Image (cartoon, rainbow over all chains, first blue to last red):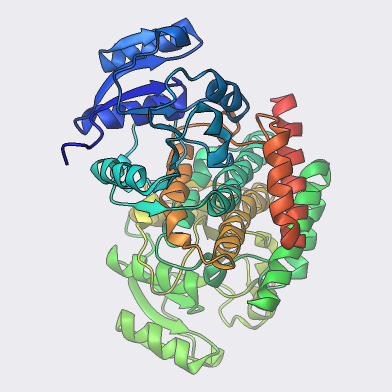
Length: 261
Length: 261
């Protein structure tokens, strides 16, 4: 255990960097430094963590056991090239980038992907966040697993191929779901109705998926093949051309899926 | 108050009829009788309510202050024609049928639409279920409001036009959302990955919508216009032709919407 990860540098101070760094600190890790190209972001998160901010990679602390890269996907290759400590352990937190994107940084590379949606200012129960781990070397994987187990009860070894599948699935389950909420909100607000009226339904729909297989509890006019109701809805949606197409398209997909399930 | 609704007959013993009848009983109303064309459904719900079952409309109790029709949309017109007590107060619970569908039943008609997804066996906190009310006469509306306030803190007067808009919005927020979950589940299970890994994300996405405007908290590759990630996802989805189209289509809708918001 004496070789465990104790000191961490967080590279990136966005939504993921912020929530992850706070979770590390709360769970007894020492966050030595926060690096961000943005002075304001670096200062703000460093202040919350009571640690040192940095905006210049040349001033990156050499003392950490782990360097966590939580920056936008497009910026990771350049960061890997410029990372100054080739013997140090470097991981990224991206769902869609392969581990190998870090290989110019050195030999000890890995991935620490939290499968959750984060906002800087929204608290999250990190113990329930699935952590998807990958490492180039088994010793480093053991270190990551040990660290991850301090933060969460949901720790998984996940290959780069599996991780990108999880990321695609997460786009459907989170981003596209949120867009469905946004369409509902738009339909209501354009007609002077409150989105608040749908909130209990939204929460219950998610709650149902906590214990059930979503395919098995699908409800609504499409799965019942209730064409009268669907036609009525399409008439209403004629005022919303884009939404009408989505309505048709997803309804067809529901009908199609119900045939094969 | 002495003219309030005290005795109810439930016509229909499906998901809505079951949860609504149980909520009525728990809140001190007397459910005199459950009618269903299915002997099994009538018996089963009547047993849970400790009341009389009926499968023949000729045996419908004449003693109720309110008759609640919780049957499939398509069956409502025939029920209205055959309803034997033209002087009695009859409401339906459908999101998409106008109140007028009941007019052959008599003069005292209305709607009692609970905007929630129900399952016979899943308990629901009825105090948070939005109840959308409509009545042909103001005196009956007052009776419905009084009844609804006993069940829920969320009581709304909603016209037939507003109600169908709510129903369309609910299809997006609930049925289509659940289909997004089902697609995610399918992508994962076909690759030997557990849907369980997405459950915390699904719940958090819904939780966020409880306090925020979904349009304002949209995340993901589409709203960031991250074409590299979207291309990568489309390559993965080439194994799932229908999902690939949905991915493209919803991504375009997210990009389009982010321009106008």
